[in-house]
Length: 355
Image (cartoon, rainbow, N blue to C red; front, side, top):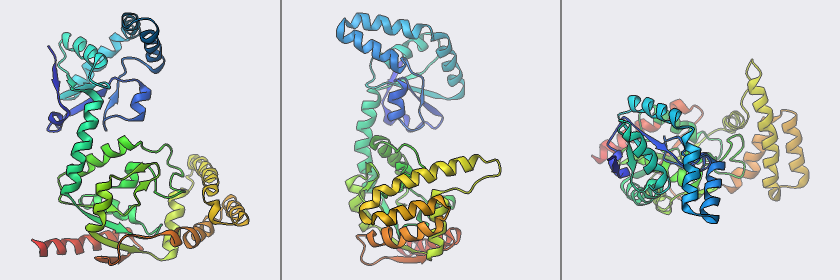
């Protein structure tokens, strides 16, 4: 008989893989980070099975499910053979640890491949994340970077990460930059459940202090856990300032990538231009119609620096505020590599004094 294990037990295993056997649509929406999708049923097949279950009987629904999966069993078995050789532990899950995961694990196990079923499926995993995320938040001391748009806070976090310091990039986890224009060029935003999963994994490294960027409670469509949002002002606060020229350069690089010699980036750049122009309509209540149209015209003409500086001066800066009155440290950033090293040196000294 195959084994069923709780998600918590799997965390101690390093050489492991999670296999999500739900439909591609379910998998795309949210899953366990790092999982792969080997669906028992595809989206259209599950719709048929669901209809049969409601309109006819559970037996008819199961029969249809067996018919759908049976034609793919050889390739499914071959894939599990490959995964079994590549990973020490393979954990299979569905929505609630029911028929879908039980049937495939039982079948594969009967053929001599020792894989495991995740107890309670994704539902129990979510319960675990909700409970344990609060504990991780309580455990840490946030080191929070504050500063106006374009001051390079994200780049500094990336450099600190490269230096080996614990970093949680909240905007990367949310796939959103946190403003009304924050989705430009990034594609579909992370769901709330996936954001919480990424955050838990980021905090799980066990470090007592973690660098992060100061954010409002909402980052696009996702919300920071209230416990983390409330704890940020209690942590170590760092203010980042930058010359306007540097901020403009950062924003243009971030929103509109430079074209490459093969022309592929040029196409991407054109798409991002159009997306940025559409995004300007989201802030039209803050500007006159004439000014918005002028910004759109300047973007079409390639005058990105002009638009970036205008948005900094007349949109972002007047609306930037923090809950911090007195910062613990202040740095001027015109070179994120150097600034990250200066922050690291200062914080190293701080923690040496505390020991």
